[in-house]
Length: 239
Image (cartoon, rainbow, N blue to C red):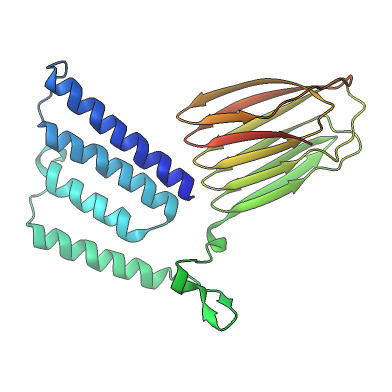
């Protein structure tokens, strides 16, 4: 999740810098001021980052700042700074009381001291297998999926706002081709693939990356790896 936050902030700051450069070159003619536009970009970056980190304070702060900056444009009633600040504080306190972070003990110390919280109650997962086709979805948490089916034909793996590890190294197959679809957004997915497989990778990337290790597959099995990654990373490890 920290990696997703860094990606959001990095993209937000880069976008703000690009906007500032273009405005100074008079290539952008907008009805709002440059600084208002920069605040808007940072508000969006902070909002998405706070959602990824499940930070109520960051969420309501970004919305409050947007209210103060763009009230007229958004058709919102004008409010004083202290009124908005009070609303943000009350909402943050209220949501933190309704959805408290669970703390876990480590020896005689509370892990809350180190900023570690149990967010497992927010996690959503689903898994399935039918006729050699395996599916797995994960969001807002970490999950490891071990595929050991005797005749693996293909799979679909989805991950959002979390970390998913898929182990295909124990999967057997009598097929000459298998198709694996991966969808990853705002998180990281790692695929552990048999090194003897020949992998044909075709993953579309937007504001993310695909990391692939060396592969010298020589078996008859060809794995067609398809899918997409946005605001995150897909890593392919051959084992």
